[in-house]
Structures are given as C-alpha cells and as structure tokens.
Length: 144
Length: 91
Image 1: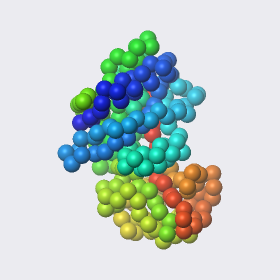
Image 2: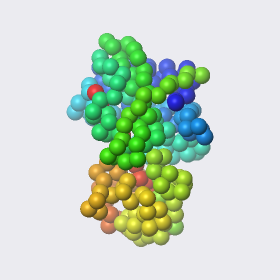
Image 3: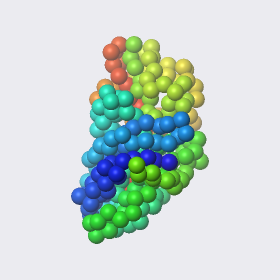
C-alpha cells in the first residue's frame, strides 16, 4: 500500500497537468513501514530526458536521482517510488513501464491526464525476485 | 574507505544496509569487494556472463563511470560510489 498526504497526491497530479501533452516524471521519498506500507513524506519533480519522445516516454537522469537521494538522506528519507503521467492514455502500466522497472519493492504511480486534466491515479508495486519474474501489481493508495 | 550507496531495492541483499564500505582502488575492485561481502547482490548487478547489467548505472561521486574509465576508473578513500538502477518507462 502507498500512503501519501492530499498535498503530495495533488502535487504529482498537477505535475502531470503542467507537463501535458508530455509525460511528467518524479520521485517519491519517504519510508517503508514494518508492514511494507510505503509512506511518502516528500515528492521531487524530475526532468524527463526523453526529449526525443516525451509524449509517450520518460527517463530520469541518474545524476538527478543521486542529487535528490542525497537531499533525501539529509532528511532521513529513502527513495520509495516514482511517478509519471500518461497523456490521453489509461493510468495502467504498459509493457515499456514493466520492462524499464527495476526498483523492486517500490511504488510506480501513474496518472492519466485527459486533455490536460488529471483523471485517474493508480499505483503499482514492483514485485518479484529478479528481472525474470518481475510484475507490477496494483496497490491501494491511502490518502491521509 | 570508499563507500558504496545501495539503492532501496538491493538493500535486502546487502544486510539491509544503505551503504557499504569497500576496500578498493578502482570501481571494478569496489564492486568485486561489494559482492564478496554480499554474494546475493551479484545476480542483480551482473549478467550470467559477468557483465554489469545495462540498467545498472554506477556513479563515482557525481560522474557516470561510462564517461570516465568505466570499471577501470580509479577510486580514492573519500569517494562515494552510487548504484542507481535506471528509471524509465512510458505508455
């Protein structure tokens, strides 16, 4: 399960609206509780380096992630997931999303942005033991 | 000693540690020492033929080793090595 505040939930959706008709992307920071609930305590917008195809692809520069990770460490926050948007497309993971997902145990949040307005937001946990059996499984988003 | 930062998904294979000190003077040595200390990491970092997986980015401080001397890049005592699985996707 993913737990986040209304403010953080709104922020990632708004990022999708602002980036439309391109995909937005960002990082979720926080902690993982003993019951494996991922609790978001901050979000960080990231640049989409896929300037060749931003309407249907995203990629976060690892250097940017390292910076955000370092800043998060100073606040005792870990990277617990990522978010991106699907312009005029369902909030469901694609084969590309799965193929490019490697952060096991983290949440991948997807927001569909229909004609510039954020529609559904879904979250998926990357499960499995390695690249051969990985799956993105839908999880509840608890907005508290 | 140089320190290797372990990303969240790999900590379960590194004794739940977020960083591991390694004895090394090169990236190759650092990663070798890392998997020697935590053998379960090997299959997540390397392919079966011993190559670093394409989606595993390795940074020496703030530099991608692909743009330095790759695994031959020299490492000093105060350096930080970051393992960063790539983050990408799209509809």
